[in-house]
Amino acid sequence: MPPARQNHVERSATAAPPHPLHSPDLQPVSLSIMSYAPFIKEIGRGPKGSKPLTVDQAESLFGDMMDGRVPDLELGAIILSMRIKAESPDELLGFQRALDARTARVAVPPGPRLVVLPTYNGARRQANLMPLLALLLAREGVPVLIQGRHDFESRVSPFALLEALGITPAASLADAETRLADGHLACLPLDALAPGLEPLLALRPRLGVRNSAHTLAKLLDPAPGHSVRVVSMTHPEYLERMHGHLVAQGGVALLLRGTEGEAFANPRRRPRLEAFANGQAHVAFPAEEGGAPPIDGQPDDPEINANAALIRSMLDGSLPVPQPILDQVAALQQLSLTPRD
Image (tube, rainbow, N blue to C red; front, side, top):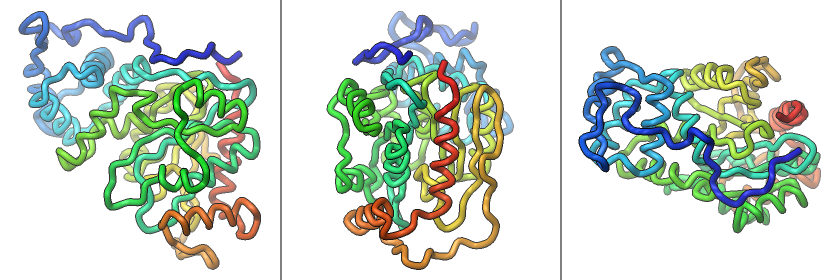
């Protein structure tokens, strides 16, 4: 049975980790101010000299970051240290636990699992077919929740594209649940699901680089045990890291190299689509070989009206849906039938 509807952020029994960060060296300097200097000293020595955190330390730290407890100076040092050294498997697990404890829960209607589709980049050169993927799944009765945010001035907003297709953000969690039950499709901004993650992502323009929160945003799960997360990465090392993380975490997910950062299969050449369930991974569809030339009859125009018109033409059959998108739909349909917890 789906979980009871709740319109607030749930926290697990261990959601608020106590200070200090589970290390005798990391003692609070007062009742209200935590000293992060010993911690920064360990992770701030570069990719070769730094030491990884334990799962518990990482959970406590990322929880502090999401709760706004870390002062700006220390926060910047932590973000850049993690950016340089990269997150270890234990750190990713700890960060995920902190995020899960601070993520709102969405009730999933009876039937297939909820596909959680992140959107954080937007289109740059190619048409964005993320809404097409969502609409095709919803047409097949698979519930889809689109979640994300957009702050790239150089890219076309995915939320503007969704609005052109008649898909607007839900007014509340309850509204999103109603839309999922009635039409199998809903959209929620990140701040409705994980408000503590929003300020961390908003630091990208100020610092000039992404941080761990951008990775975690694509791992957000508002329906644990009832979901299929679509996890898209761009760089090969992140795909490898996500493979290990999804196996260790044991949830249900589909991992792929995204298209311009968006979580849909490149219509020109299918990427490897890797399925995860219960700590096991298998290749749902292998990567296609060869080049990725433009598709005849499919304009590569990310402009909102042209992009929306292209998606409508594919939905009504005027234009064929690219095979890589159909393959991704098939893989997600299959994963959505994984028994719910």
